[in-house]
Structures are given as C-alpha cells and as structure tokens.
Length: 206
Image (cartoon, rainbow, N blue to C red; front, side, top):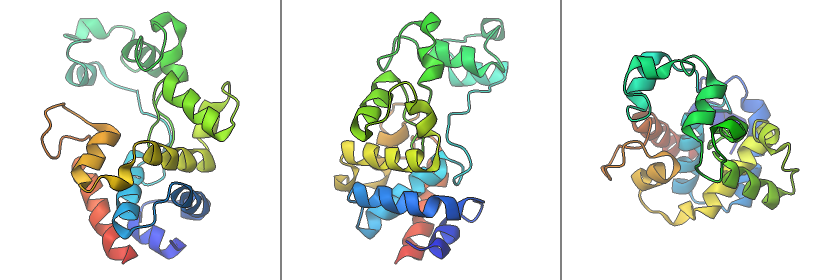
C-alpha cells in the first residue's frame, strides 16, 4: 500500500506518513495479502482509531451515556456517581473480573484498557500479545499505544482470530467489536462507518 492510497482511504488522518510502514509491516506479518482482507483490515483499524487519531479506548462518559451503554451496571444516574467523567474508575469497574482482570480495586481495568489499532482489551490479551512480540509485560500497554505497537498488535489479533478465512465482512466486524449480541448484521459497534471505509478501501486498493 502506498501513502497516497492510505490517505485516500483515511482522508482525515494527519499521521499517514507515520503509520504507513507499520501498517504494511503488520499486514505482511499477518499474511493479509488479498484485496478483500486488506480492505477489511484497514476499514476496521480506521474505525477503531478514528482514522489513526486515537489508540486507546475513550472511557470519558457522561452520566446519561453510562446509563445508555451499561444499563445493568448503571440503572440510573445516581448509580453513576464516581464514574461519570472518570475514565480510570470506569474502566476498573466495567472490566473487573473479566478477560483475566482482577477485581475493581486491582486497577487492572484501567491498566489493560482497550489499546492499539484494534483495541486489545483485558489482561489476557495484553500479556499474550506481549509474549508474542517479546515485549516487557509491564510496558506492553504503552507499546500498544505507539504506531508500531498499535499496528503490529492489530495484525497479531487478526491472525490469531484467523480473520482472513472469514469470508463475510459483517462477521469480521462482529468478531472485532460486537455491539448488542443479537447476531444480526450491522450489530458491530460503528458498523456503518466500518462499511463505508471498507468500500472505499476496495475501490482504492484495486
């Protein structure tokens, strides 16, 4: 992929030159060589990062938004006290005792928050990625938020989940970030944006 192609696919990015080589390296390492797979990979990392603008999960929510996103955990505004506009506390609560994380007091939710071009989340994913790339487990979170770490970890995730052998773009998106677990097409978070990026990538790369 050339820089011109990357900029056509993600026209809002200001960091195309920084990410071109890492993304190409990631696709090479993961065996993402077919047009369809490259377009799907670029569409999903483009969506997850806001076109290469952010590399960690946005957990800065208002009280009303918390109730909408996590209605079981936050059934009313009163329940959001201490968590609204508090990303660290929120991550520690909603990711506690999941994905290899400890309880809320452990701080694992924030330490292992979604990071990288495909938002690796949880202690298990972070440490497995660190082991694969030979990164110190104490600094893997910081590495995931660098251009090379964000890109290569996305390629690793893609390969681990065998996504090049998933022949349906909707299913690929669901594996990466499912929204409401209904099994319906378009339930992956931000599906409309992913699809628009995918169609543009297909056109540009061909």
